[in-house]
Length: 246
Image (tube, rainbow, N blue to C red):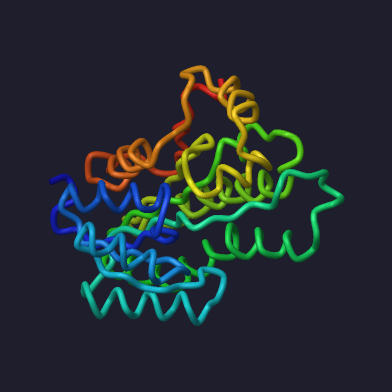
């Protein structure tokens, strides 16, 4: 029960890594808001783990403010924020990515971190406690071709994590990031372009441990970084990648 008494928001929690983080947080005693643009998916996860479902468009300021207000109404305060919602463009040469796809990646992967901070950091600063976790990517550390603007958005998230950590440390708020390698989530097919045994083998060949990351892997790492056990850890972008970035 490492998160007993803690109240958390996890965005993009209707599936994949987000749902894995919700499962671990709930098992460790946290009360969790399952936030997702797909309300049906959020409700299914919330029912399974005893959380509160909330529809949110993380790239829209009013929607994020509504999520924050709903969390305060449900919990009274927010101890933990996990910025997990993310999208990618399909693998293609950088100059061929459409402006609409670029704007979507910017909006969901980058602007969302600003919007959730604007909505929730003031309360954490007032209470002089809080943990923010940004789900970045190995692509932000060691980019690969044809996912250029996605990689760049995750590199931005890593830098934002460090900048947030330095500014918020005097207020008792810690900010860290996780860098997962590709995992068994709805985004896997988008990363590969096509989900075939050959493409999977190609991806797995880049991971020394020889498997994709799982929602459980992410939940375990997220739980540690958001718990009081990590009270001296801030500004870290921890790889959960089976050695992919070595």
